Amino acid sequence: MNTEEKIFNAARTVFQKKGFAGARMQEIADEAGINKAMLHYCFKNKQLLFEAVFMNAFSQLAPQINAIFNSSDTVFEKITKFTHNYISFVIDNPYLPPFVIQEMNNNPEFVMKFLNHENRPDPSVLIGQIENEIEAGIIKPLKPKQLLMDIFSLTVFPFAAQMLVKGLIQISDSEFNEMMEERKTSIATQIINSIKK
Amino acid sequence: MNTEEKIFNAARTVFQKKGFAGARMQEIADEAGINKAMLHYCFKNKQLLFEAVFMNAFSQLAPQINAIFNSSDTVFEKITKFTHNYISFVIDNPYLPPFVIQEMNNNPEFVMKFLNHENRPDPSVLIGQIENEIEAGIIKPLKPKQLLMDIFSLTVFPFAAQMLVKGLIQISDSEFNEMMEERKTSIATQIINSIKK
DNA sequence: ACCTTTGCTAACCAAACGGTTAAACCATAA
DNA sequence: TTATGGTTTAACCGTTTGGTTAGCAAAGGT
Image (cartoon, rainbow over all chains, first blue to last red; front, top):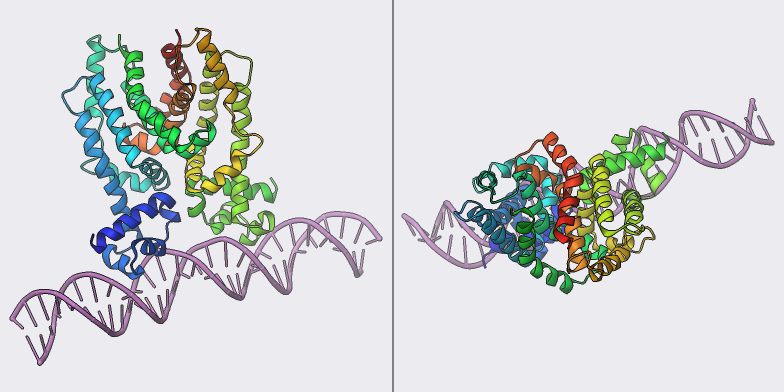
């Protein structure tokens, strides 16, 4: 692992734990086991280092999501695949959702920068497909965007609000992971049952 | 409005917009239209000022939620009331969910302090009641905690991840509010339909 | 052999930060 | 009128922060 990678990994760890404002360049340097000046040698400044970490987080997720959204599967298959894949991915990267949501709320200017990114997750094809399947009588009449919001909510929220949820309904880390494993399949079943004609 | 209130309101605004780490005492002072020293005169230090704001946010929400969770209503009625009341409340306080979730993830020590608070939201009664209604054949067999997670997810997530959601599915502020108005009733209907026998 | 570049660091800097101090202000009671 | 005690401020302080500088050592080119 070269120095740039060491810095990047350290930065990802610290930024995801503390957020942009709470992260300290010194802490990232310590975590990487190098001098603080090296951060600026490799990544110019805090903002650019952060953007590198943030964009990388997204460029891991987005193509995976788009591949599902834009495939030739049926809506039901897409829902099944999305919830399963997303939860699997996030179980391995549990810091990602709170991090992304936090920074999107804190840096609205930054939202725009990423929304114009080539690889942004784009549900427009899926929305059209949902409308078609409604007309075809496969899916009950509903607003596609509400359905998307339901899918995102059920899959992403438990991870985004992990600490809150664990505290509120009193579950341990292992119980949480068990529940999430179960949700990999149960969410899709539940949604499909409630929208199929 | 006395000075303490001016400070408190200013602090709430700044903390909710920037988070604890990102908030600046000077900015709070400016927002309140007073001298920075006055903050320390009234609230000792940044940590205590933050805790005052955070606890206040919770003490607005928690009793309302508990009143519903612990009433003598049926589970279906509780779900209906909870989703409706919570969304109504959060439409008027849109900064609250991201703020709470962010700080709970960033200050895990702080989570404990609030979880031992007398007025914490407590779903234990509701969980027992769900188990009873399952035995009574009113509700399909399911894990009560999964049901709670679904309810929280569908109601809270769109607000917690507001910026992300608005960007992803391409909706304006007014469209977002329209969708949330609709969800006040649609979420409950949907959940109840999918769990009733 | 002699530059030039690259990877890296110790030491340093100016600005920003949370917090303190000492004095001014101002109502009110003696 | 003046003494008192809570309220408010300008000025200041020590520390932390992101960022810079000057230089070292090894690698490569000529």
